[in-house]
Amino acid sequence: MLDSYVQIDLAKLKSNAQAIIGKYPQYDEYIAVVKGDCYGHGMKAAKALYDGGIRYFAVSSLEEAKDFREVLSDTPLLYLEPVASDRLDEANKLKLTLGVSDMEHLKSVLSYTGCSFKLHLQIDAGFNRLGFNDKEEVKKAVDMINASSHKLEGIYQHFATSGIFDIHYDNQKRRFSELTSLIDLKKIPLVHMGSGVSLLGHPKIEIANTTRMGLVMYGYNIGPQSYGGGIKNKLRDMRDNYYRKKYSLTETIKDVEIPLAPAMEYRCRILHLKKVKCGDYVGYDASYKAQSDITLAILPVGYNNGIGHKNYSRLVQIGEKLYPIVGEIGMNMCAVKVDDSVSISDEVTLLGKKITLGMFCRAADLGLAEALLGIGKNNERIYIN
Ligand SMILES: *Cc1c(COP(=O)(O)O)cnc(C)c1O
Image (cartoon, rainbow, N blue to C red; front, side, top):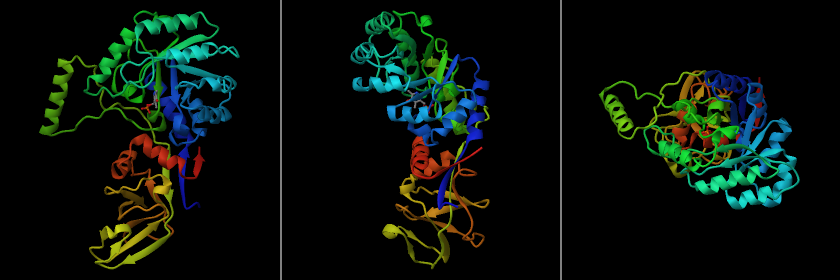
C-alpha cells in the first residue's frame, strides 16, 4: 500500500453526469469544466463524464487541453480564456473551440487562416474580468465573425455570486440581456450563463440552452440548503423572503434532491503510535499540550500533500470512529489523538466516508475546489471502477 493516496471512483463520476442530465434534461448541451486537471481528479475523470453522457468540455489552458486530448481526441473542447496570438496553431492542432473576450483578441483570432475556429463570445455582465461589456461592440463582434471564415457557435458569461439572496446575480442577468440586445441570440446555437450553483439553486434561465458545471459533477451538492428549525432560522427565512420581494430576486431552490456521490477519497497509513505523557507538548511551536496520558497516531501527511497547514478541529476517520488532529500540521507529518482501539496497521481516511468535503474545508480553512485540487494534485491517484 502507498503511504498515502487519493482514490478516484470513475463509476461515481459517470453516474453523477447521468444524474445531472437526468434531473435537468431541458438543456441542449452540458459543458463539463475540467480545468485544474479535472478539479484534481486527473483527466481520466473526463472520460468517465463522457461515459455518463457529457459531450462538451471546457479548460483554462492549452496545457490542460493537451492532457484532455490524450483522453478524448475529438470531443468538443472550449478554451475559456483568450488564446495568445502566437499559440493559435497549437489551438488549431488541439481542435479547440475558442472563447473570445475582447476586440483585440477577436481580431487576432479572425486573422488566422489555418482553420475555421468555432468561437464562443464572452460577455462581461459584471464579473469585471474578461469579456465584451459594450453592446455596440458585441454587435460589431458578431457581425465580424459572421463575415469571416470562422463560426460563431456560442455566447457566455460567468456569475460572480450564487444569487442566493444577493442582487448581483439578477443584475448580471439583466446586464447580459442588455449587452446582447442588438444581436439575435436565437441565431447562436449555444447560450450558457451559469455554473453548478445556478443549475441547482435557481430555475433555468430562459435564454440559456446550455449549462457549464464543475463541482457538482465531481459529486458535491452545492445547492443552497434550508436553515433548519428554530426561531432564529425562521427569522432568517423571513428576512430572505423580504429581500427577494423587495428586489424582485430570482427564486432560490433549496434542498435539491439529486443522487450525487463524491468521487475522491484521501487515505493514508499510520507511521507510528506514540505514547505522550500528561503535560508534555506535541509538535511545532509546542502548541498542543497533553491534558492526560494519550496515544498519538503519527501520519505521513502534511501540507506537502495539499491538505493545508491549518487545523480548526480537524477530524480523521479510523475504522468507524473519528479522531482529532492535534498540534500544528507540518510539511510531511501530523499527529492524531487516538485510543486503544487503533492499531498501526489501520488505514486512516482524511477525506471521504464520514469526513465530508465541507468538514474538511472548514477545518482546513480551504475552499471546496481548492481542497480537491490540493489533495488531487499532490498525491498518487488510484482509479477504481
Ligand atoms: C470553473 C468554472 C465553472 C465551473 O464552476 P463550478 O462552480 O465548479 O460549477 C464554470 N464556468 C467557468 C467560466 C468557470 O471558470
